[in-house]
Each structure stands twice: as structure tokens, then as C-alpha cells.
Length: 257
Image 1 (cartoon, rainbow, N blue to C red):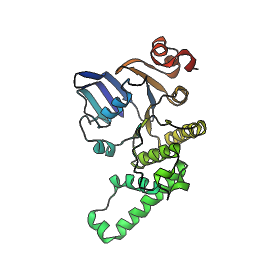
Image 2: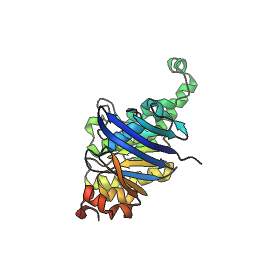
Image 3: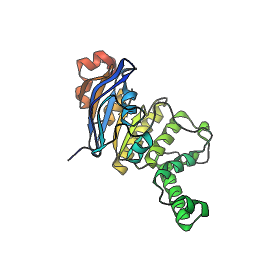
Image 4: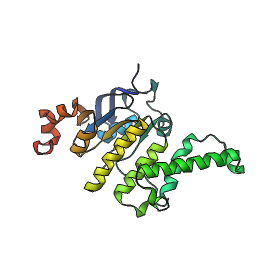
């Protein structure tokens, strides 16, 4: 049986610079995997190649056995691959609830005429979208901010809005790019709880980039280490934690425990 996501021999060049070399990945339904590495290693580029921001120079990418290499990002998202971004991609003029409501619109079942006329079908679906949006806000502990503009929220709360928005697309697999960036220790603990709840309640597979090693080691079942665009080590957390090449390239002995 084919994995949920399969990436084989993915390589990419920016001009004459090879940014990613021969990257391979498989993710099965419900798995949680991590990608670590020093700054500039190419981690976010890997995410961008798989999710359609860039098209790989070489290699194959399949989501549920469907070739998605070169597919536009919004089409990949509609196929079941949701993501967050290292730099928050939120609209600062829009309130929190509307962010989540808008994310549902890729799956609406009524047409333009229904929307224009305000038909019962459209009203019923809009009410369901609003209900689902509030459920997500509650799960991510941001329901109290529903009517507030994004700019009024703390950085950690904005991160949770972005994750809730990604989950509103009903992904089969969720890519998290530095989900704890800018968070306080208390927000970090809460984010661990939220990711575990999302994984448990939705059964979604998760692939994450994260620089906080304890966070990765606590959550991920399998970890890859990327250096200069190449995977130098991969395995279960204990293997990565004790791998001399990983320690030398990235972690540092004082950071691995």
C-alpha cells in the first residue's frame, strides 16, 4: 500500500546553487516526523518544494499516489496537504474568526448563484462553517479572540490562529514550519498539548520543522537532519540525539538532553 506522501530524489537549484540534494521522504497516515538542521540548511526550501511554492528541478512528489510536482500551491492544499509558515502569513486587518471561516471556502458545496440569492443551501452551509470555525478556535484556545483583529494578539496566539486556519482545510497531512517560533515557555507547553490533541482527534499526519530540540524529541517518531541541503542522518529521536555527525553539525552536546 502506497504511503500518504512519497518524495523521491528531490533536488533543486537556485541558479547555479544546489539548495536541496536527493531528498527522500515517506509519511504514512497518522505519523509525526520532524526535519531539523542549522540555519540555512534548506529546511523551509524542502517545505516549499513539496507544498508547491517552488517546483523541484528533479525528483518526484506524490500525495496519495497522485503526482503533485509542479502543481499550484492552492491545488495541493485542496488535495489534503495543509501548512503553516515560518513567517506568519496572516491578514492583519482581518479578525480571527474570519481567518478560519475563509479557510473553509475551498470546500463549499454551493455556487455563486446560491451565494448571491442567499438560498437555504448557502445559509445552511455558512452556519455550518461558522460552527466548525468556533470549534477550531476553542480547540486552539483562541475562541476568546474571535472578534479581535490579528494584530491585537500575542505572537503565540497568532501562531495558533495560523494552525487553526490550516486545520480548517481538513488536511490529511499538516506541515508545521517552526510552530513554536517566538513563543514563551508557557506558550510552548500549550503548543505541545495542542499538536498532540490535533494528532489524536483528527488523525492527521504531521511533518514539522522546529529548532527547539526538546519539542522535536517529545513529539516526533522519526527525525531527519538536513545540512547544506542534504540529509546527513535520520532515525528515531534517540538515534538522532546520540548521532556524532548530528551533534557536530548542529545540536551541540549541551543541547541534546
